[in-house]
Amino acid sequence: MPAGSQPAAPRPEAVELRVARLVRAHGLKGGLKLEVYTDDPELRFKVGSEFKLQVPTDSPWLGKTLKLVSIREVNSSPVAFFEGIEDRDVAESIVKAILWIEHDPATRPTEKDAWFDHELVGLSVLREGVSVGTISRLEHFPAQDLLVVETPQGEVLLPFVGAFVPQVDVEGGSVTITPPGGLFEALTEDKD
Image (cartoon, rainbow, N blue to C red):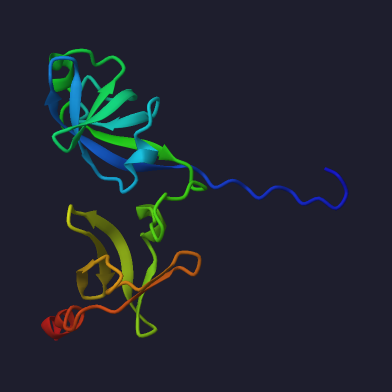
């Protein structure tokens, strides 16, 4: 190493992200309709992307991967075509599988003020500067995402919108919340 140079910082390890579920076969040529779980489909569903499969242990697809050949919108739903799935019968044999993709932590979401689930899980949830719990997971729904906050009294579901979550500080390890009245107080009253 040249004098005065610093060793390179260790590269963070890749993590796996759940990005979609194969909902049903589409057409006769092996297309599969997707239920997308990612907020960044353009990043995840590029031609050549490779996906690990989550399937039952007795599935012939266990331990296999899928490589994306093409994807298109059909009636406002994404339909994907993968290597090795060339007809409807083969497509039907993999329906309900969950697709996972390896994610480089250095890659950022393409949207402003967006985070990956793994960046938020474990963060402390602060209300008026006081910790009320920890984010245990996120639930993704078409209308909005929900933060699942683990509190000493149990889980609280909080809509992940700017009005209720005005600040996310991943580096600092916390999110600041301004929940609607009664959301966290109701748990305290029920347990007394």
